[in-house]
Length: 72
Image 1 (cartoon, one colour):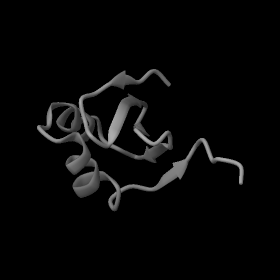
Image 2 (image 1 turned 30 degrees about the vertical axis):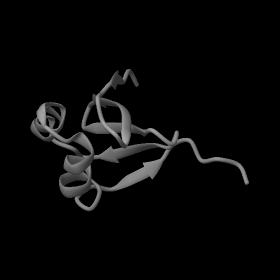
Image 3 (image 1 turned 180 degrees about the horizontal axis):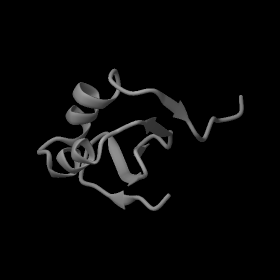
Image 4 (image 1 turned 90 degrees about the vertical axis):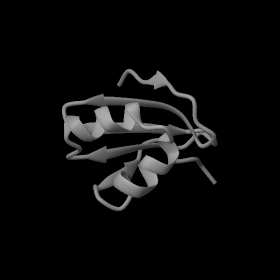
């Protein structure tokens, strides 16, 4: 999925395709959130604080999966 770089202290890039929101955090973890309406993505992209928006409106609202688990 194509992601765009964003200005955030916690998030490096975000992308959206067919109801899937992909978030790359600055520490390297990439999560996909499922069933995200396009309007939510648009509001995220326009928000003053992308990290706060993800925490408040996305993390606890949508099913998700870590797509790049690190080996231990």
